[in-house]
Length: 197
Length: 294
Image (cartoon, rainbow over all chains, first blue to last red; front, top):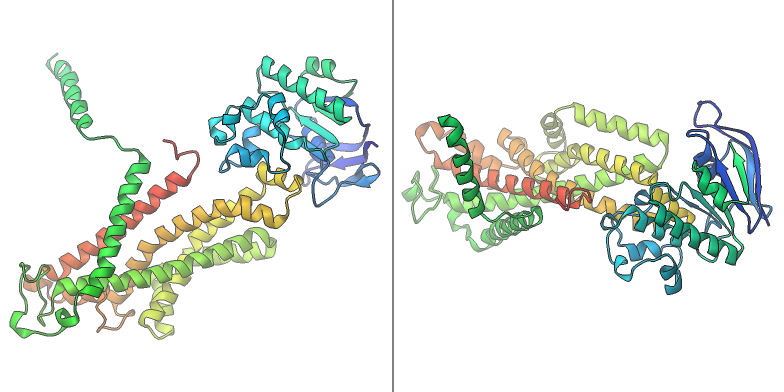
């Protein structure tokens, strides 16, 4: 039941190719790290794997089928800047319930305080917002989670806390987890397999 | 030395003086302006209903009278009460301005959304139209349009509506384009939300505020242009008590020293236009999530 990228090539407009003939297979329950220097195409790869961008060449399939164009996407992407990924005009309870309704256990696991739910996004810190984004992406329909520099702007303590919960859930639900980061230590600690770009 | 000593004393005094006035937040100031504008609007509209038409009838016994307790704004060369004429004129201007601004804002919303969502050809066409209308002075086009559709209230409304949409349409087009590429909108699509759901829950709430601010800011423009072309003789017919007509008639009598003929109608028009302008700008700042908490 893998997420499979076959021979994907991508470039923006007429710029040089960012990805050329790139292939990747991630199985369920696997934690794969992708690392590389800035601008090598890590984020673009994440966007292609989760269906945010269409590659010019090649295909991305999940369980042998192309990613759905409509409806819930089982490949969920978590972005680097949580403050951009939430609607600034929505209170947090509306944001967190956008895709599914998480139970109290889930909220507690990520340390989401009940009184944060009634706040506006600009009243929460980046670390607090990112927990909402992670929970929002973790519905029962999700089978692959791609974390693109998910904890880069958070301090070590919160990083450790969030990763601990995410890996626990991934293990329990047999999710595939793709960790994109330029932090070698983080990737070495979390991942069974590392792809250098 | 002396000036250096006197400086801090003066500043201290100044701050003491400033503290006497309560410092109001923008939210409170906007509420006060909103209340005053509503009061002004209501008094003009109810005033024009309550005041009988007798003030508009010709009465040579009291012609050319300066402001007094009987005739607050004085009377004109036909003995008509200027207060009644001003209130009725403002009420008419309000109606015409409101209608023209509304038509214009709806046009802007429609064209702005079309330009941002219906592909490159539509976008180019709308942008070209925007440039065209922004490039030619409003008054010239309004006069042409009002003249070609036969003048009157209909001519003014069509003329003002057709010329005032471009700036709001441009704002809405840019807003939709920016929103479409916003990360939270893309995330929403991947959380299984339909295009319609995203449009109504993510896009529209942003646009509604822009729309209303645009509408409020269009309103004073519309009134001024209505008064402007009526003043020039291309707008409303001379027997209607519109502010533009009153002002243009008063021009002929200014040199005779009858200052009140132009002064009161002009000042009330100015107050109304400024009130809406301030209100629009304050709401604009309040609705911006980044500036709202200042």
